[in-house]
Image (cartoon, rainbow, N blue to C red; front, side, top):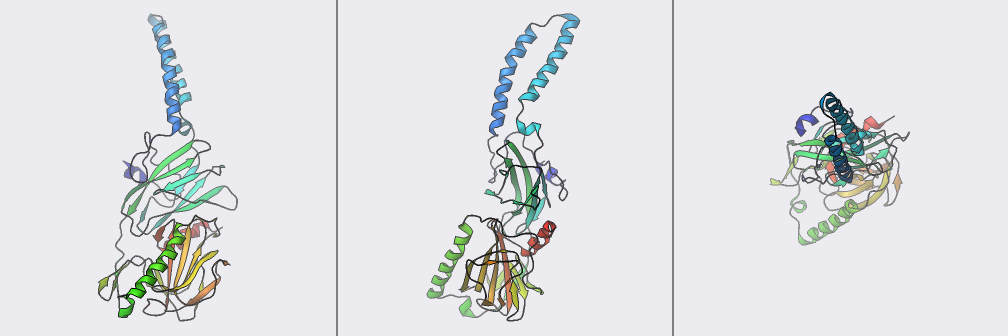
Length: 356
């Protein structure tokens, strides 16, 4: 039933969706307890029944009894409606999605409109999704992302406004996708690491993981994301990597062709949080755009920014190169949203909807 209802969502139409009449599903598939408003409503209904019973026991006989019975039913219905929780009486804000499904490594644009409260929360896969207001302040938007390795299935989305008691639940599907395979030949020293290289790689991984574990910063990005280099894609997102005939991790970004020294521009405004020369990714720049959105630029020939530097959309952060584990000059561009590694090209496509 859930999948059937979700399949009727049209892009950016209000989604009345999977409103849970009983207990809503949690991110791990278990059922959550009903909101406290339900308990209050139940206690009110229990208080109504005794008085109704006494009234029914004292009703007269015959035609007057029939009339009294109808009046009693109407009265009880009115009292029951008055005792219902706020969620059932109010439609709340309008919630819409760019789609009812995504592939692993994909994302969906969420819009919440018609709610003045600053306490609106959206929870997806166990994480609160940062929402950004538009310039008029009447619309909030955010991205729901599924990591490249996310298991296919149906996942719940919770939209809450604690200040009013509003709460709705929806379900979105994550579909599987075969991204294909890529075969690469590299020098043996870049594939089979010695002890010193392994220690270096582990230390670099710790530095990068610290970025993902930090709290979300306020949004610095605005509107659409841009391609950092305007050239042909030569390495697709999600491809399973076969390096020197051995299976390796899937490709978590896109490779863009470029000549050594060609400028690399930041895809949206943000702050440089890491600029370093790493074993695998070579000269690398990590930009935090706020709202738990990061973009990464690898294999640079030169780095032209410093950690802590704020950079505007389109600003030059480095140049195309072939440093690190690279077969030739190109830019590896990656994006991570709320901890999920996603296809940067999908972010470009969806974010265009946010341009004035």
